[in-house]
Length: 141
Image (cartoon, rainbow, N blue to C red; front, side):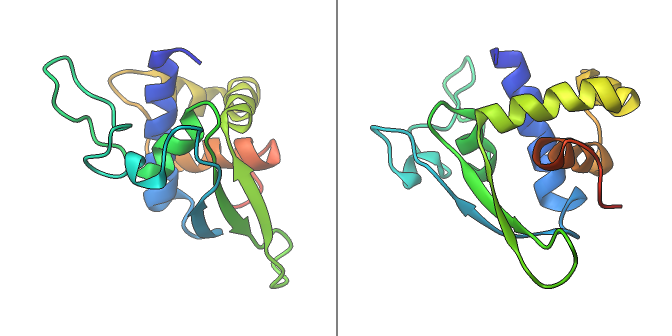
């Protein structure tokens, strides 16, 4: 994933995790931490927070950073059958790429919103993206 795509994906994750998908996912947790780093490196002020050209921090929540770096992931749980049984899902680079591919092919309007630098999508766009990542289609909502 190139740097521009990573920025788009982080924005989509923000939209999903901070509102768009809160009605169906549970228990967001860190998963794999890339070699040579520790969890705190991905928190505010950590060495893995991106920097702007002027050296200032371009803050992203750890849940938006970890899955977008090689060797990193987050996990969340979903009650897919709405029967109280939670299934854990891992989100990493491969899952994010699959979500982008599915969204581009099946949800063209949402894809266009996400790719528009003046729009970037909203909570519904982020929700669509996260569901494409995990399920290959929109199953909730």
